Image (tube, rainbow, N blue to C red):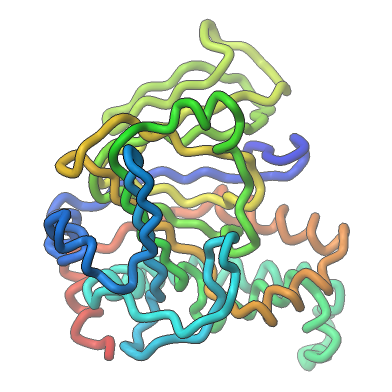
Length: 322
C-alpha cells in the first residue's frame, strides 16, 4: 500500500520482510558482526563516535562485486565528502549482489518506468536524445539503477549503551535522509530497536500485529478512516528487513538501554553516488520531475513481490565476486 510522507503529499511505500534463518546466522559469522568489544575498537574503517554512556560505531563500505575501493560520497551528512570507500566483507557484498539479482525484474521495471516518466522521453523515438534526458531527475535515478548502484552504499551501524529516548521526545532524532535513501534497504542483524516515522495513510487504519513484529499506528483503537499524519512505530528485531524511501518521510530510530552483548547492528544500504553526481541530480530536479519520480517509485514498489535471497543464492554470488 502507498502512504504519504513529507507534507502528507509525497507517496512512500514501506515493504517489510525477514532474512532466512540460515542466511541470518551465516551473516553473523562475519567478523565485524561477531567480534569482541576490544576487537571492535581496532577495526580501522569504523567511525568511532563513542561518548559514554552512548557507544556508536559506523562503518562506510560499498557492496559492489569488486574488492577494490570505490570513489564515492560518504553517506554521513556531517562528513559528506567523497573518498575511496572500502569493500564490505565479502559475504556481505555477496548478499547485496544476490539481492539485486533475485529482484532484478523489479528494478528493471522501475528503471523503465522512470525512463518513460522522463520529460524528454518519447515513445515514438527509439533514439531519444540522451543529452537532453540527462537533464531530468527520473533519468538520473534510472541510470544509477542501470549501473547497479542501488543498495551499493552501506552504512554499518553499531549502537549500545544508554538509549536515546530523550532525543526522540525532544525531536532531535527526527530527520529525513538525503537522496541516496530514495531506495533504502535496512537489515537488522543484532539487537532490537523501533523505527518511528510520520506518515499519512489515506485508507482505513487499525492496530496490526503479525508473527514477526508489532506495527502500531496512532491513534490507537477501533478502525477508522483518516487523512491525518500518524506516528508509525515499527519494531526491528534480528533478521528483520525493510525497504522504503527514507528521503521522503520524517523518521527516527528508538534505541533502548543495552550492553555489548545486546548491541544493535543494522546495515543501511542506499544508492551509491559521488558528490558530483548528486549535485547534478539536484540541479536538474524540478518540481514536476520530482513529483513524477516519487510517484513512479511508490507505484512500482507498491506492487513489487520483493524476495530475500537464500543462503545458496548468496553463496553462489560469493564464488563470482572479486
